Image (cartoon, rainbow over all chains, first blue to last red; front, side, top):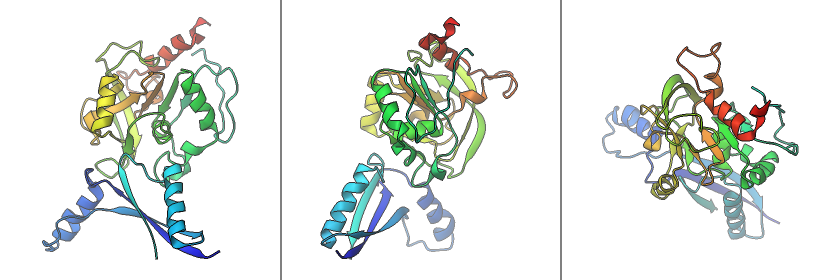
Length: 84
Length: 202
């Protein structure tokens, strides 16, 4: 069975403040005159290698696993799952 | 205090006849993924879940609170402090609900001088969860000041049946004069438990 790279990105929901992103924006990016940048949101990236019949199956299996094991907290996080 | 106490390794099962469970603070799995997220799947949690459903008193302190939240036994989430830093300081909390097995010896509104020590201690509840907490009188402790950005300055909550309580501050570090300032006394949390479990009969 082929092995696929699956990337899971976990970020705070947009409705939640992201103090880390805000600090990077205020104290590094904008302080150094990059005034065209208006927002930075941080996220966590998990990279899986998974065997599955197709890339679509790989994404589906990983999505289900992430939900079952609460790899992300649905109350505060949104998640995206993608494969090449 | 009159308890017969047994430490249980998280990969083992709980012994039978347990009157109450304390999930202490510290770190589990180095807070990897999120504080408490991996320990929430430890084998012992299955037994804690069953005990919780049968109304056995369970208290989670600091990392214990984070584990109970991640296991879905308490509502909400615990996020990085606003400061993004580990916070270790003495603070004041008030008792918002004294109708739990852990707070019955307090007056409602009573202040406790108590330490906090955590990195991911900012309690978060969305609107729906806040409604649930408010309607069910599930907010147990609140900080007197906004120390970390917690929703409604919440320091501790309970489940709707009120037998499971979680709190970020450390009552065990504020219950003996040897380790805390003279005006700190969180020992009623443990004495309430003794009364609840009947262990005080000794």
